[in-house]
Length: 66
Image (cartoon, rainbow, N blue to C red; front, side, top):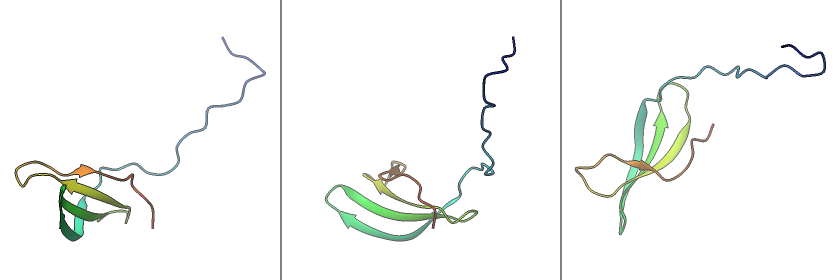
């Protein structure tokens, strides 16, 4: 049932892709290895932490556009 008094749902216009994270720098801390990473495709950056060498990194920050 359509209504004449509703607004259209906005569509996301930015292309979505799976980020390919590259490590720009890394620093050991008491919590593990802190990684400053950047997406090779779109340039978005974030901070990750890797608590143990055998575990994958976990994001500490959200992805930020340059």
